[in-house]
Length: 114
Length: 109
Image 1 (cartoon, one colour):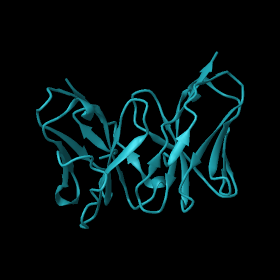
Image 2 (tube, chains in turn orange, cyan):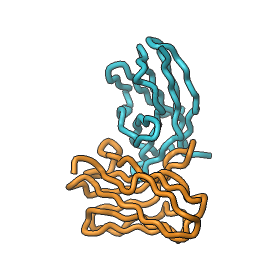
Image 3 (cartoon, rainbow over the protein chains, first blue to last red):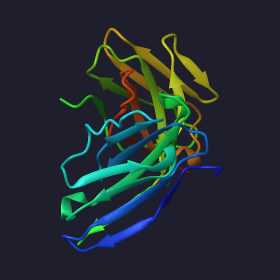
């Protein structure tokens, strides 16, 4: 597609439920990133996928968070047993290669856990 | 200590004014530096890269001071459309970008 597409744009869920967030990167972009932005905070790195290499999961805040990228394209971020502190905007970005100059962000998924 | 620190502002300036703000970073090995712009409830978008010698892009000027580990952004002849949050971004060459929390600029008529 022309840009990075994320869905849903908004998600309200009850505490304890599982949620899945989807990211469809720009076609041909081999690198895909997930970040989280809480109110008044900077973006927090979550996970990085590069081609067929093993992902860097070092930013995932707990084992309730997981992500996968199928076929080197679409990625899904899953949060199990959601907690109120998981409420944030989850941003996905893709790039042709490492380096911020090539980053394109999606419009994000605003997650609210009630 | 946060990797990237910014004055949150807000900087409230009249149209036509000049506004400047800094960002400090803690990792002396950082290689690349950027300013992103984020409008309210929108995704960040790359505004400009910051080069060692300093660089301009129209009304925007970015400077890098490696010795003191800070970068700056200056906006001349402010427009209403410049109102946004400006994110300082540092790449330590390990592909995990570090983002500042942002500096809010509000330009008033």
